Image 1 (cartoon, rainbow, N blue to C red):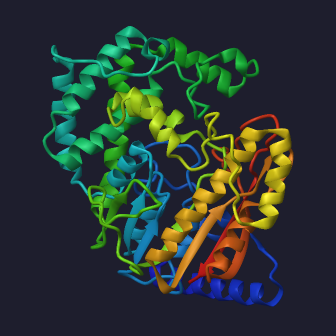
Image 2: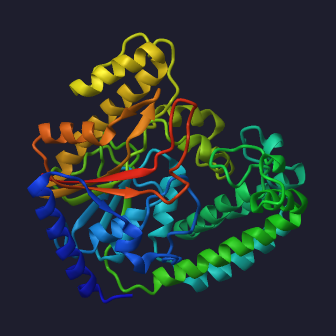
Length: 453
């Protein structure tokens, strides 16, 4: 890896070049972040891989935008209002910035907190031995209420999972308990009948894949090897790998911290347990990747994890989904009045979509309105002369291109923000290349929009 000062000088020079180029012709600049930041390729970097999650932000992007002296400096405050599993937060503290995050999904919030919290590896190793022993001898346990539990889990595996979570909950140290909860959550889908190749729970069906293909062979092997012994073995393997990752973070000489401060990005609070709003103009850099309109069902994808870890009950799932930006579910009453976004070309397109599919029209209209509300909150907490970096993609709605990046630019410019430059990067991750329905296409490009307040 290059020295930190060398990296920052290199990135500053590239950023100046982008600003100058865009100022001259206003043409978006094509980039490939994997080529721009090759030192991050194929690296299990610190705790980034502590837990899977759909459509995770490519770590190269926050690494580039944080490791420079143009947008922030050491000790600066970085905010991600859609923090997901904390990619931005981790890269911020690695670069000696203080990081703050917000997310509606309790699982995402916990992953973010765990992956940015230092814990001595020896403490985790010792606790793991005791935890396994207690779980193997556990007699008094209670299975959490899990959605369609018998459909997704063999009865014998349910018992082992119940014993594990019962003993994890007895761990007194909050940070240590959270760590093992995340390792346990990582285990849940791996010992279920859910297909590991599909983000939302879909039952394993080897015949879905081509005869002899790696995915088919993997699915067939998984069905054969699911057993109570596998649960403990998998848990130990997952946990040991994560202890190694935590060890690399523990040894890092950094004095900055990361905190999850809110579950509602429309009202960013000072802490997760406070109703008091985060101070105006307190953030130096906001770097975030908002959800795509209807592109991922984050709560449904996390439903088994949320229930087994008891981060959310079955009855909570519908409410969490209803608070998710980009959701697809609307009641009949919601469909009666189509809201206006205030962006003329967006509203014209939405009226066209309304004639074809009223639900999709309401989806994208509501999506934009809620994003605008969150962007207002971002501008409130962002310092004057602070920077806002949005990673977003256009997508097709009823066979019409929905120019999300253009609508967000129009809105932010109307609020006084200045576009410094736009980048376009092709997506190589299949986590984002999702096709939601027959009238939508896969999102194959990301726009990176850089604003100055």
